[in-house]
Image (cartoon, rainbow, N blue to C red; front, side, top):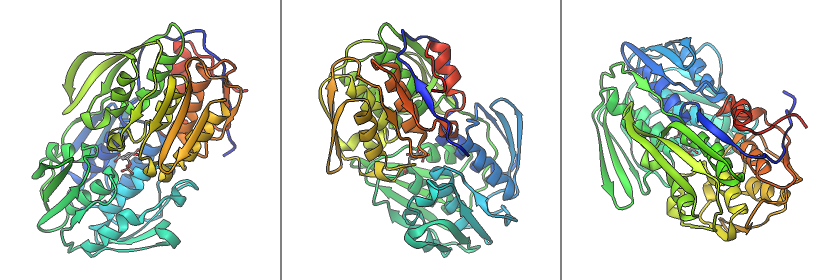
Length: 442
Ligand code: S3P
């Protein structure tokens, strides 16, 4: 596909009330759990971004019936735990690390052969973090050098339960092991030294599995009893806080702006960005806090105003791992020097996001340094100069961050390829333009 460059000229202001698309993490899981349950699962608010559509196609290729009834409204007729069947072709997970890694868990404990691949970005990303611990179930994995995709899985029909301490904070690794544990005899035990998003645990419970979660220091111990009968359950997907982050920060930075985002997921393991923005002095309010589909949800209102620098501790990373590029944009226009600590994991996202974020700010005329795993940003205390071009490296979040920076800068910004935004946030351009932006081809 040829790249789609896009320009964000400075916005006069932004105003309005909008809803962002469904949560990506919950959408992937809803389709996978639906396929592993008996009966028909109905999903409302499913994210129809390319990443999730890849998961829908994979679950279909594995024998589940996956039907779209209308916008965001999907039905999955599941095959039961252990009931998926061998796919006739390679499963192409596109740009999605979550889809690929979680599926490795599902496939490990189904007794057939399958092959996973992805686009150039996904084929560069490390998979050993899931395949090494999953091999303890008895599954076999063969991959390219460094454990990279394409990757072949020989699943096992007599899986052993795994007891594993996750070495890096990763909800994907935890979730892959729990999904594999669904079709293992006995108790699968996963220890995470730092708590990460718990959508898998919540959904296991929702579909009727016996799962216990206990706190252990800053982390958690999760125990799952294998071979439950998962019962189909309806899923209401909240708005994705990781997508809401882009219009939210745009509203904080563009002079005179006020934007309300309805129905945003506020799971406490996802709200690190809001904590940082509050520490920076942002005018943020949460309206109508409620529980929807088992997850905390609220309406977020952001109002423009001056921001001050922030020092973000490494322990906050799991609750905002996808939000560092857009937080960095906020820091770029805050007064003072910000330090975002402990960002090692950003190097293995859709791109090397640590380098990509530093380059994005540099392209807009903001002084930035990488010191070890920390990102140091010398804020301009007002609109960044802008005027540069952002290299997005097949990374949707770098693209959206570059565009938001452009809206709040003096000279605007160009991103070299906005095409990947559709992986997580279809309709981003129309939605931002509806608020008053003028995103357009350069
Ligand atoms: C996700 C976990 C995170 C996050 C990704 C979605 C998930 O990845 O970056 O966008 O749905 O479990 P890691 O587990 O690699 O931190």
